[in-house]
Image (cartoon, rainbow, N blue to C red; front, side):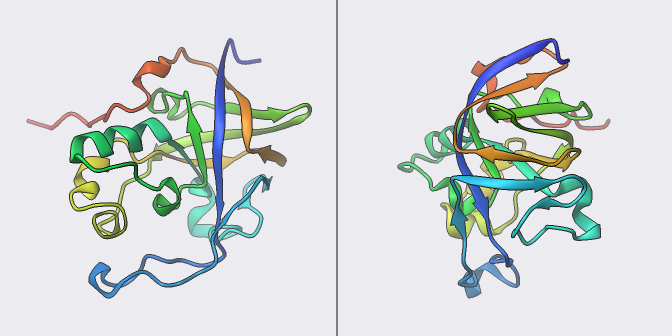
Length: 188
């Protein structure tokens, strides 16, 4: 059992069967169905049922992306915009109350209801793409670096539901740092 438990809120569960951001941003995003689901089914080693990354070999270690909404709030403050739409980031699970970066390389559990939980292994940061300047706001691509979320491999089957949840972590977290950008140190 993980020694640390944190109350979080799952704000959005984003599922889309197709890619919307490909080609040149100036040409505009593709019109594809995207669902902000009340619940999603996660399958170990495959991802979220119905999502564009589900069962794709190239995305097994990154089939689910966790994203802290505080990051988007920090980006909006930095850019001086109003609120930014978290659905446009196309991150799978948008959370409130979770510092994510310390979770890289550890197994975690996201519990969103009695008996409903998913074990994940965050493996790397989710790098933002140039599309963020087009769909969120000018400058969003650079502002999102270091706070684009975490790509995760699903380790167990389970359900996730929108609403109050619990994040079980083997490492201590500081939820007040959820919106901070984390940069890799530059090599000399």
